[in-house]
Image 1 (cartoon, rainbow, N blue to C red):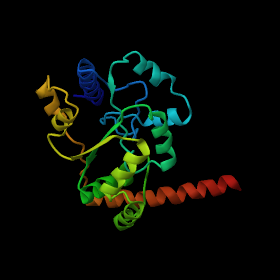
Image 2 (image 1 turned 180 degrees about the horizontal axis):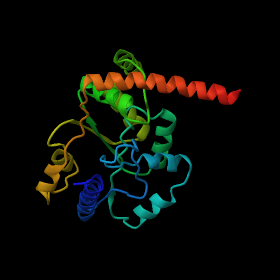
Image 3 (image 1 turned 180 degrees about the vertical axis):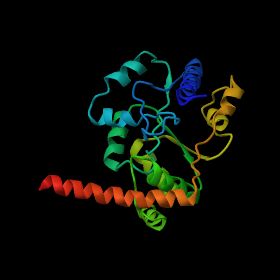
Image 4 (image 1 turned 45 degrees about the horizontal axis):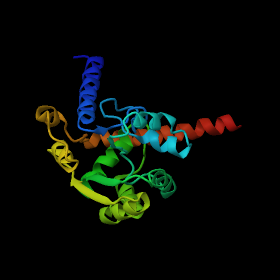
Amino acid sequence: MSVKQRQAAHRSKTILRLNALRECGWLFPRLVMVRQNPFDSARTPGHLHLLKAISSSDTAAFEAEIGAREDAKVIISIENLFSDQPDQILRILGTYFQDWKVSLIAILRPQLDWLQSRYVENVLSGFNTSPDYFRTHVHRMLKSGALDYEGRLAHLQTILGAGKVTALAFGEPLVQRFLEILEIPQTNPALAGEIHANRREKGAFLIEANRRLNILTDVFGQIRTFGAGK
């Protein structure tokens, strides 16, 4: 199967899943979907663009989509909401949804597992190109409070005005447990079972080689900038 065929098959399955949610009275808005990592075509897009739309008061597409399904409950999925978004953006999001009945569901990896996965993505993603050592990455995450899961969830609950917070342990069967929380019947258990939690496992040599390449990329970028300035 070619890359284009795999992507088409992935899109077809995604559409099936979204349609299944619609049939159960849930809406997963599609007009504000975008991938956090534009280089990862296999990952299902989330609603990162919605944050930008709300911040710029450009919510017409989102409001038109949910307006067409006024009776539906809405699922918003923003992958980096837990650790990356500044409070200023979170407050804008909380203000926008202040008249909604908000529930927060967090899918959490064990901290070490998350640190490793995030580090691999930072180094290899193609849009971050981090040159940091793993120890530097760990210290930064500790300082940011991203590893204090309980404290971070409490902060998000307050700032987003969530009436209920649920934490799910990362792992299989993730989709089945998610559906149970939302009280959505599993009308297609086979399809739900095909969805696997994202895991990033790369060889240590590849990670270190790419980290060093990122250093060179950064240096040459600074040289070009300096040359252009002159």
